[in-house]
Length: 475
Image (tube, rainbow, N blue to C red; front, top):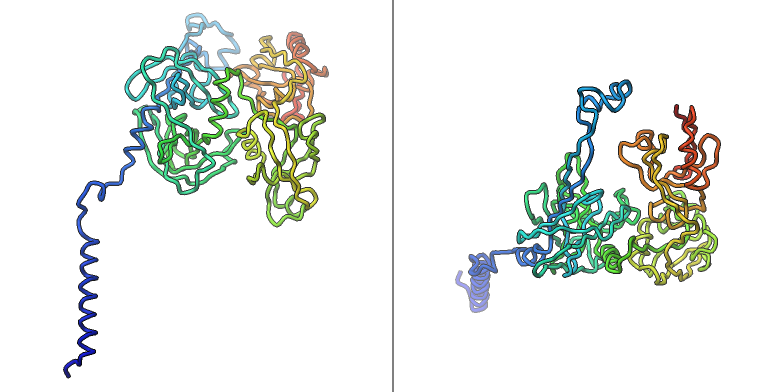
């Protein structure tokens, strides 16, 4: 049967369509004709950001026993600190830590992690172009795990990395991690933003970490996490690992927090100014959410308000549920602290409050924690269980600096414990409040110093640790 005219038209159209489709498929599968068609590269971003990332070298001098036998408690107990023929005197040894940093100011300001340079006697940086400089530590903070260095005598033009607005990051955004892992030299790794607002990492009281799967290894600490515009979005700080290497779970401090810290360093402050409102906060659990009639756990619950604090002046009450800060939801106290910190001291934060099921707006002025009593800081050097502990009188300001929840406590708090000291060996910790010693109430640092010099037969010590009183006894 021969096709009629209509059939011929349909066949002709089908043939042309198939020919056209075949041509398109062939064109789509054709080999690329230019480098741009075959090459996807992060080289332009690395070229812009890399020069501003430096290697940080921190050297610390420690004293060690001349003989390994001095490490044995048996020999120390029976021979004291001087064993004839075994060199009872101590010798000095230099320990070096390695990390990374980012130049954020053309005058030579460098931001890095506090744990990279902590207790360092000497800090040096090496640039990607092989220039090396000695640095001074301008500002550091253990809570935030940030530090700012200043190049002493900068020579030549210094590359810098601009700070991005980390609040604009989204999960899935491409990022590069630049640092000096294992001391092999500057290395660039690529990944995505895996998560935002991580607050259960256990590093800081102002946790709001950016999580990334870009490979981060030891030595990357203090290095840059940059976006595809070549701007700094975070300072690489920690990794989750079981064997010491990268498992694809890294954490970075957001650039908005870095900006607050660097601004404090530029102003010449001895400590970073963090907002304080005088309210004790608690995360909302499933049980608390059910008791409040919430469909899910959310917000931050106020459990107590200090008198004459900004929270009291703003009209906040115990039992209020803080839902958001400036319209941005908060999920736990660490996220709330982060939002206030990036807002800045001297500003006003608008809090969205759920009060007995009714939503209201409350404006709170952000101030620094007050120093209600002279701190009178001193280090106990008398032979006692407190030897090696640095102590201060408790105040809201001191509590804020060491990350202690202030509930109106008075007395003496431990702000630091020297490694290997008697205070360290018996388990005293930063943030412990010394309540009493041998029945004597410890109301001030000078009282503790006098008791430490008394040399009794036994020591009976009571301390307040996170609201719980612990009692200890020592010979």
